[in-house]
Image 1 (spheres, each protein chain N blue to C red):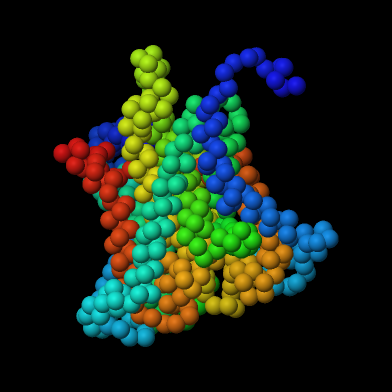
Image 2: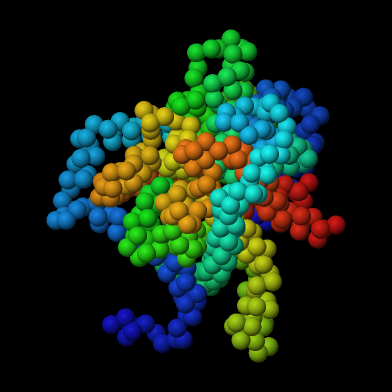
Length: 283
Length: 290
């Protein structure tokens, strides 16, 4: 997918240059303006959030903040409710990403080598969490997990978040496999490697980028997930997004401003990992 | 029976690789959803809960409001996203990289942080309100209204429109447009007769993605809206947690899920596809193709 996209893009890049001399085909001003406005719309909330964290500890939020202080960050890192929920979110996220990327990679590899229409159906079924509104999932999970005594527990959070992260792993590993040459496996088998050994030494390194991207998406999906977490929460076990939700709806706690800034920074750093990795490789 | 009719060969072990993923999905998604659907028919089984949806006077009002706002969000994302995606195909590599990075920003802005930001942006005398006042518009209220909820939803849904559109538009040969104009067509006519039909797959994919996701918004209307203009997701939540009426919540959830899936199916037959979401996951960094 990504590869073909890149190709069409580079193929597109050549002709407009030649056409540029024709004023008929110039990019109209209204198009540039509209694109700029939409661009601002995309980034507006993100840019609001970061300075808000440095505002004072007031009960009303105003942008731009009226004073500059690190009071809210201090609150965040000293209050066990906040820092504790950050730890729980990180723990759930890492475990969920591990489960999702293991199970998701296995499924993607399996589906890649299976012929027929049944695998297509299985693939569609595995994508269901992406199209199901999260509230419907959350309420169903909540009622079923109540019977199974999984609410408010680490295993409950991990399996729920692993399931919603799995489609991302499936998609990114499938994309990586599409450019994978399966004759390599026949070669390694003819050299005496077992299927497992072939996977570890041949397939895995070639699709590792896909697995990594999928795992990062799965982590971020879990780390940021609110709706299911709202239903699974217990007084003992609460993730950071739930704590943030409560700080707006239940008790007004301005620490949410610092927490939002941190969330944005953490998630951006995580999602930029693949880009840094690639930049390093090419340079 | 089947054993006899199949030629003998070694069983394909690849099926085993699917077991963990399917088992996980069964435990978290399939079984809970099925249990919830079964519960909605009550004991003894009846269609009472479903009949109530149509007759209780609240559910349908909220349903049509949700559908309406999902339609508005979908159309606005198309109107704003199409020119943006088109601009991406036209811009120089550097500008395109910038435009692509900007599209991805709403993705990596945490959902709670983003909603919190909109809360500040849209509040009375907040930045958006002040901009409108500057232009002499005083009577638009954003906070706790459907307008505000729609503005915030559109922002986060736009990437789901722009990315499938971009991948479709980037594949269209622009020389066709010049050819049409060379044959005497006006630029506008050339666009509608040549470019637009070729972009339809991307358009349908964007529409179906944005619409299905918009039907299920919970956090944004809960934080930015008011109880008077709640959305269907809030109604489901309210029935489950405040009224502890799991059968009613199940019926409403099943109803919304079926409506959504039918619409996705219809869009699929028109060439749009929910699998366009893979474009979103697999969009690489804008670097490297300049």
